[in-house]
Length: 81
View 1 (cartoon, rainbow, N blue to C red):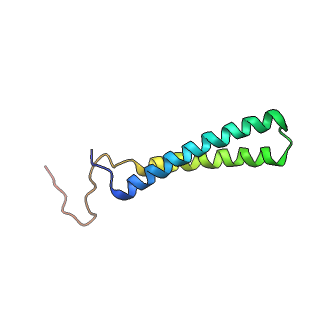
View 2 (view 1 turned 180 degrees about the vertical axis):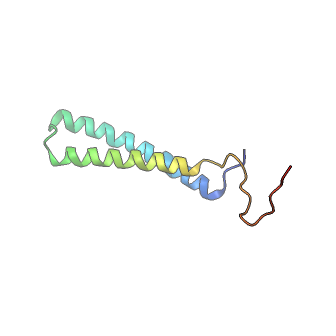
């Protein structure tokens, strides 16, 4: 397995930040659901924010994973055995 490059490490850091932000947003959403109800504008906005941070965290984590194998250039000579 190849190591992560600097760009992939940055994407991993942002994915961790997104997941932490999602947890904070989820806790705030639960609080506002209990106090204001589901019909409030702030509650709906927090729900959208929670889903946004979750989707960003998942996508950035998948982008940060190192490749499982090395890809050869398209114009390289094929090895036939």
